[in-house]
View 1: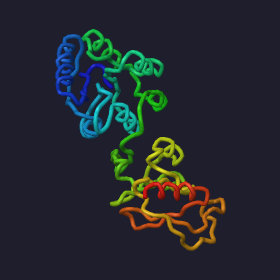
View 2 (view 1 turned 135 degrees about the horizontal axis):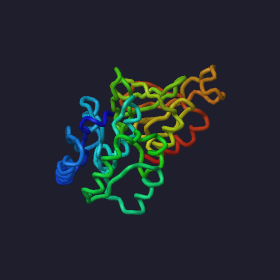
View 3 (view 1 turned 90 degrees about the horizontal axis):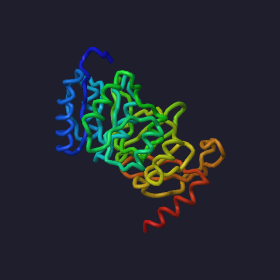
View 4 (view 1 turned 135 degrees about the vertical axis):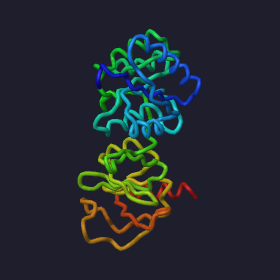
Length: 263
């Protein structure tokens, strides 16, 4: 980031009046320091598209937005080699904002005042990209998308389209009805984040509950598939994907109970 060049800012908020107000305040700040508003976005997904196709130094992003909120947007930026800096703009109350202060994350309270905005903008050249540890301490829920790197770009896979996640040696395979993706995250961490919508059926598989069609008894595999002599031939049939996945003995009872409760 070159301090001599105008600061390139992307404004992200799902409400048009909020974007206009912030745009007007930024125009007033131009008298004090060089900046330019390169664009606006209505949610995190649109903002990520902007960032990957244009040069952006700073995101001024709302937190509570449909499709993708501001914190999830910042999580996906961690995949970038040179992510823009992030300042959150929030209407959270003072108690909730305490989390931002404890985790050293820069923020502005709505309604934004020009003096506070100007102070934040002046700190940007020395501001470091937000880190995974900082984001982990903020109030947020499970992500709506999984970020995968394809041809140096971040592609977003909607969680609602994921049928199952399979642990490989050093990565996780994401399976959707249309194709597969490679994700560099651990299955254990994904299980913690997406419970109860996903269920562990096997040491290597995390499956979307909505995608489980039936549980059936197949031929027991003589190989030690689960690494624990647990694969006794039970499989699950999936919606939209013509595969039978192995079920470990320790997970079979919970799956049977889940399927029974649907009847």
